[in-house]
Amino acid sequence: MSVPTPPEPGFLASTPRRSGARGFTFIEVLMALGILVVGSVSILALFTLGVDAQIRRRVEARQAQVRPEIDAILQAAVDGAKPGVAPTPLKGVGLSVPGYSLDVDWTVDEGPSQTPIAFPFLVYRGERVRALGPHPVQRSLFDPGR
Image (cartoon, rainbow, N blue to C red; front, side, top):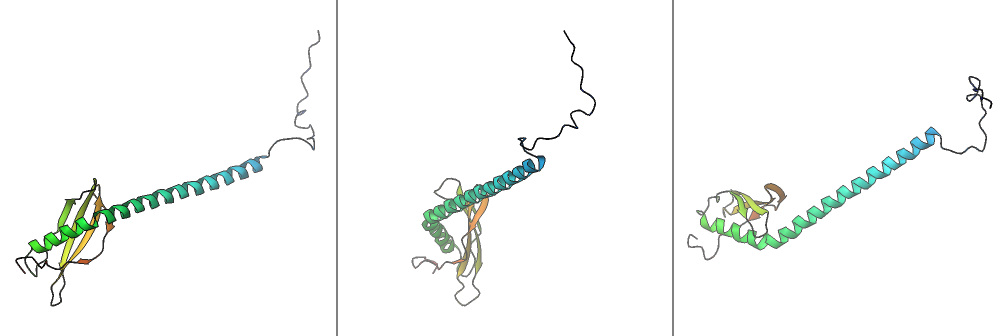
């Protein structure tokens, strides 16, 4: 039985590469990984935009659902205040939709009508999610203080 002799030093390094050899170069692998990373980040950004749009639609739907209730709360606050005086600010007034509440800041129009102007905010789980814009509220016709 013969013992194989070890190859000479540098034998493997000096072996010429065949022109038909298969495999990927390091540069090709890096470029493929770069393309994969860019595509993955783009898809994650789209998911984030989709979730944000869904949350906004949900808040808008809830806003439309509770708008009559908000109007009634604002009217009751104005009718309960003295004429020409801004009602007391409201914080955390519960609404019929679970998790939603209402914050309202007030001011009075400086014109001759002295109409109270409400600045309501729709609140979800303690965080203001939507400013509903300035909302002038006239005193009710049936208000005894009128």
